[in-house]
Structures are given as C-alpha cells and as structure tokens.
Image (cartoon, rainbow, N blue to C red; front, side, top):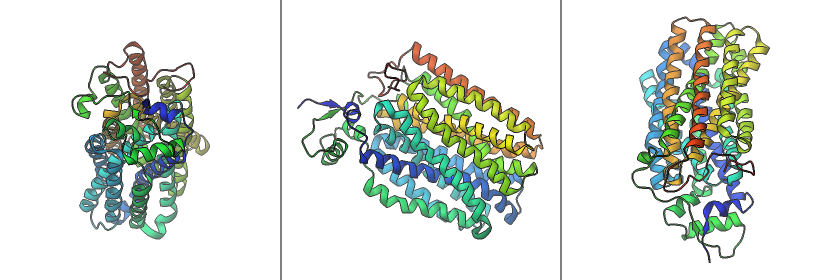
Length: 457
C-alpha cells in the first residue's frame, strides 16, 4: 500500500470527532490561562488594600508570573519537540494548577511572588503546546481559522476571569479567586490524560507511525476499521537542536520579525490586562464600571480572533494582521482621549481588543504555520517567550507610568507606538516571505502565501 503524506491524509477526511476533541481540550487549557491572567489584574486592588501596598509595589506581582511564563516557554517548548506534545502539556497543566492553588495560602508578598513565578512556569509551557498540537490536527485550508478559534479560549477565559473576580471578590476574597484558578486545571488533567491524543504528525516524524496508538488515531480520523496506508511527512529531522533550527537560512528573518511582533503585541495586552482597571478607577470610574469597560477588551479580542483567522485563510495573512494593528493604534489614542465618555470608551477599548488581542491570536497561528514539525513547538514557544518579555515590560512599565503621575492621554499615546511597530514587522515579514522563500531542506507545512483556493496553505 502506497505511503501517504500525513497532512494530505488529514485534509482528505472530514473534521472528525477526535480532532474536535483536541480543539475543545486545548481551548479549555488556554481559557484557564486567560482566567489566571485577568483575575490577577482584578484581585490586585484587594491585595493592595489588605497588605497596604502601593501601585508600584504591585508591579512585581505581575512581573513574577510573566517571568515564569517566559521561562516556561523557553524550557518546555524544546521538550515538546523532543518528547512529544501530550506529556509536556499534561505536566504543564498539573504544575500550574497545583502552584495556583498553593498561591491562595500565601501569607506574604515574597511567598506569593515565588508561587506566581512557578504558576507562570507551567502556563508558559502549556499555551505554545496547545497551539502546536491544534495546528498539527487541523486541515490545511482551515488551519488559521481553527487555531484562532481554539485560542479564543484565552480571551473568553480572560473575560470570565474579570467577571468572576468582580462578582465574587467581595464574598470569597482574593484567596478564593486563586483557589478557583487552581482547582479547575487540576480537574482538567484526567480529561487530558485519557482523551487527548499525541500529535500524529510528531509520531510519524519520530518513526512511530506504525504504532498501535498512531493507527488508532488514523482510524478515528478516517472513521473506518479498515487497514490504512502508512503515513509520511514532508518534513525531515533537521540537524541540530530545535532551537538552532530557528536560525537556519530561510527561517532566521521570519523568526526575528515574529519575535518583534510578539514583543510589541504582548506588551500592549499585558499592560492593559494588568493596569486598565486601575487606570480607569483612578480616572473616576467605580471598580464595577472599570470591570465592565475592561471586559470590552476581551470581547473585542474574541471577535477579532475569529474574524481575523477567517480573513487570514482567505487573504494575505501578514497584511490582514498589519491592518488590524494599525486600526488598534488609532483606537488606543481614542481611549486616552475619551476616559470620561463611557460609550466611546467602551467602543475604543473593544477596538483595541479586536486589533491587538485578536491579532496576537492570529500571530500564534502564523508562527505555527511558519515552522516545520521538528521545531514547531520550539518556534511557537520561543516567539511566545520573547513576547512574554514584552509582557513583563508592559506590566512593570504600567506601574512606573502610574507612579510618575503621567496623564492618561500621554500613557495611551505612548502605548500606540508598539502597535504601529508590530504592523511594520508583519509587513516586513510578508515581503521577506515573497522575496525569499524559506531555504529549508523541506518546505514548512503551510507556506504563508495565498493560493488559488484562497486558503492559507
């Protein structure tokens, strides 16, 4: 029986219940990440009141978790390329669930900082692995749409985190919010263990395509009990570690431009996630009203991710995302100028979420498409790690800007600059892709050029 390429095998069959299960489970993992990110921003005022902290003293709390996210992405991404996507994801979810639960019992800032770093370590490994695993189970013509749909879990989780914190903070306190954030991922671990398959593409690349597990996955995708042809991958096992492969000719330019985009994008997202409620509260809005306005950011991000993913499959993805970032920059300026006009403020915050948070989801799909199988998890996770350095800077700068007592208009005018820079980096990457195709021993799974069928293939 003639061998068949694993991507062609996935593409020729309808989207199966097994693939939908992968999508749903990965959605839940990133939703928990979003819940954690948003809830920390909303419990900050309660921590500040209970422990008598200044705004500047809260900055290390955000920074500790983000440093953990960055370290987790750097360490666990290459492990997912070496040992498989599933074991790294299981380890990451169990670890951040346990450390988040322990954070609820912290009795001083030092202990809480250490536990937030450890929580971030697990989260940093989980998110890129879910992107990689989802991407490798998606049919090629719908990959961007499905990856962004999965990653909407982050924005939905963030919105729920803000709403839950706003509603329950008075009754359960900040410790109760952290307890919720720890128990949920621990409950999810058994489902991941028994229901989540390993990446079929990774198994074939590692010479395990004929194993019982791989054959079982193939039969579920094909919905048949008959014998199936052996699978191959277009990728080869490239020399060197997954990290060094990111800097091979044909990948290094795109790698650096992706890193620039992730850095600028996550700087904006985490500054707003961490400090927007506090900024709005300082501008005269009540905490509940600030929570309502801030939730528009997450709602906009969710809608933006869905629509931008579809547009990425139909048009040039770099131009789609660059346009969204430029529109977001304009909305950021409006936020700084309309702090007392609530309807306009909600609309502008929604626009920022659509353009920045939605585009960041699209950038994750872009990264997963750009790298070959042997270094895909590393490429996505290292881009995420570089982005996390931007998020660390954003969360820390937010506290510094508030401590410096700059006007709201000045803060948001400065924040529009990285959105413009992200757009320029994406435009440069698109031009580089057209002028200099990846010079790899084998092409990436999904070259980022439009085709006659209008898919991202």
